[in-house]
Length: 402
Image (tube, rainbow, N blue to C red):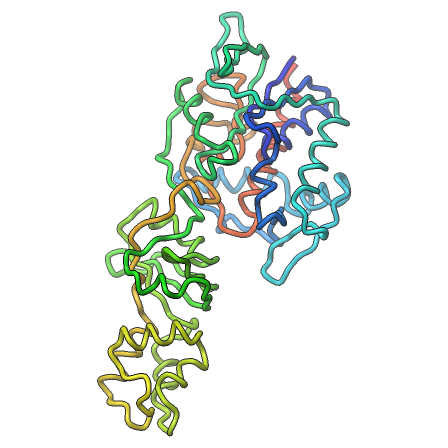
């Protein structure tokens, strides 16, 4: 029986390799001239292929977390890493950040190894072919209609076409639309792992500055999540690991505040720094923990004179500055959207697919994997891991169908 995989990204290539190695006739159809576009640009061209460790807490979904965990753990991380190192012959290295990269720091090595594995398994690849519609045949199977009017027939179809993020890579939501047209539901999509914007131009002057911070996500005064890592200031707002990880609360929910503890320090910590007295100025004391340009902006925001000595700092001014340093609400006005988002949140509901095979519960013979499903991981190789694992699961499931 023949299989067509729509999308030559991480999930699609993994699906095709696994199914073809098990004897299936597989063709991968890709919109762009070159496959693996998202893999190529990931990690600044280095490809953060995996995380060093994983937990279901590293992911969010509006579906069943139990189902999500079972899918995620169906191919253990150690075995996924062994596939890349032992099977694809890509030496990997773990960095202090907990991210895993090719030793070569070249994403093209990952793409080339996957394509070689596809060729060696007997799988086929067809590029520059955009599928726009999937039709079900009365006698079973499918007809795929391309943008130029061409038609491809197959017995099973795999939607591994991604979401809406980084549309220049070919992820423009076409797969989501095709799934909905076939009767699937849709969890509202939103850009995730995306830089945030600010209308307050004072923050734009910090472009290029980085600072460690603990960020708390608050709704109605209650903390619903928090994390500590670097914030990177951009010419339009905020980025960096901790902002990207928390961005989905802004883009999905909208009714949240991001409260920052600069330097990862709390009220007591900053009270000690500013209450020690002596001849040091306020600015020099805070600069011991934060970048100079950020310090100037925060002190100005607190309305405190930066050159005043700690011994002369009034209690009221000290309290105001401590509040700014240990509980500042970022002036977020929006996000950069799908154009720069690393992943799409939302998508086809988990409940719409079999937890065992990822076959559609709506359309027999249709399988879904990767970003198109409503499961989103945090920054650090987690979304690639989801793609590899779900592609592997679909590939194995296809091999059992005769």
